[in-house]
Length: 487
Ligand SMILES: [Zn+2]
Image (tube, rainbow, N blue to C red; front, top):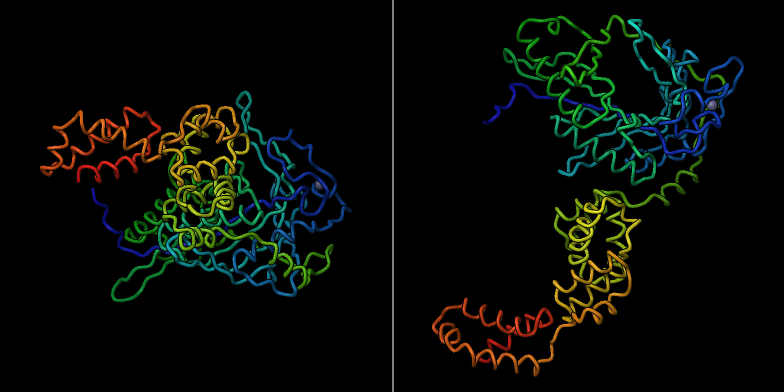
């Protein structure tokens, strides 16, 4: 089945919220890793919003937020501040959220997608997370419980420009953003714990009666998986188009609406229309002084930032000669990428072989045993040694895999295993030639067939030599001697 292109252009911008990787919360000393803790055990007067409690900014959170901005090629204005965003909701104990309104920490950056396209970053600012609500029902009575453990956890909001034009591109953007934030050490972006959420602004643009029509957008709130993002964008853009065609409310609406996504019903539902959008009455947070990030601090942070995934991928491909596919697979798992880097540092001559070991034998063994690489016995030293031995013709790749299996199981010294298992190849030409001559004498038919132009006969002769010598014969040398003798 082919899917026709939709009769409209899709325009997408994404606001991403991620929890920062700090020990403590944004404005108090409570533990920030709230997920899984018993309800309301990580709280204090500050994050409970009790009267008279005063916030103290978390320096580490500010540094991490700046790191994120640097990794996203943003600039850091000299003057920034915190503001109060006022609204009333059961999970917001103070009745306002401390955020940044008109002077964010980071502005005007970009993020490169794997396609090479750059998506603009409008801003990235700091704020605090809310508590969580748990809805339930007991004997027919509905209830809601509130847990303030998450209240006050540092949150970074990253706002993109409306530069994406398909759900796939939106997904590429959030995946690339997640990689950058993890690499920069800013956040673990644990989507499954709600520690990374996306608000997606969706609008459609098309031409009608010779004019460009660009009706108001829908903002889909709080998506927390790639699947939800794909499905919700596809649903909402189609809904907007159909509503317009049917002469629905989109034709008269002047502002954007906010919708939620129900994964179960696979549809969006209306949350707020323009008329109901609260006036947040932002004003500068009176309990905090204005924030002026020190230039030296910003430059020090820039200098200590690790290499970003896009740069690393380019280095793997351009300088190390890896395929795009291998580079991507290595980058997808920081532990594998680190192992690979450590291996090529020890054995720089053959990066492709190192990638093959890491993505082949090692990945397969990790998957099979269900363990993490840090818990495995295999080391970069082992793999570097295996590569050296294969490249020097000392052992065959088949033998190397046997040594690997042994190292994986019990660790040890590759050289000693080669000797114990008797896997060293016979590359000694005189010894090989002796066996070659024997085989040639025995199989005159194959020799005649090869001379008559049947190349495959050579394979049978190589096989016969290998059979006599076991896995130890170096097939490259055997091949060469055979050709010399009968060619
Ligand atoms: Zn607290």
